[in-house]
Length: 112
Length: 111
Image 1 (cartoon, rainbow over the protein chains, first blue to last red):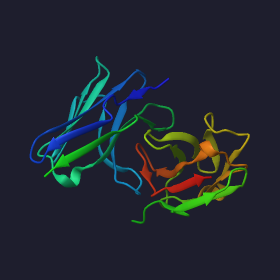
Image 2 (cartoon, helix red, strand yellow):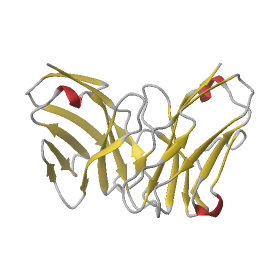
Image 3 (cartoon, rainbow over the protein chains, first blue to last red):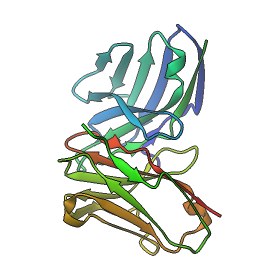
Image 4 (cartoon, helix red, strand yellow):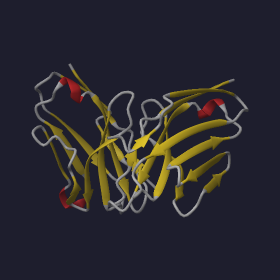
């Protein structure tokens, strides 16, 4: 039972355009959501997070939107750069001791 | 601030052999996780420690996997005997609050 799903395994975007990565969850106990970025041969690195009391959090080129009623969040990258090419994981946590539940990841390719 | 350290980076073993991975978390982080990431999938939690106690090991295949965190700092994860399906990247992460910081992982190949 996948509690966190990223339905798009890959996404290709032109440099300078917007990248939108989507994530859906099923567990209503999740109250904190994170995005991680992973390059090959490296561990995931934290990118941006959002609490369930907010619907938007922005950090530079990265914005995360949360729609609690739809149990959906998205990561927007504007403008996209070739260095953004990586696998992006959505993760969620509730009160279960901060254990992170991950989605399957979306591979983003930004073309120059 | 030093990050999460893991060793070795890579390991190739034959099936039915044993293997051990080591993790040194960020100093002061009470929570330590071991995740398994199979190619093309997201990380899956194997075990979570809070200091030197186990919080969650419900997804750890206990017939072959074991983990310990002596003194609430470093941790080791062992597989004995290994199976072909254990080929994956084993990620250690630590947390001092919400969210986690990951090490570079150990890529295990079982042949």
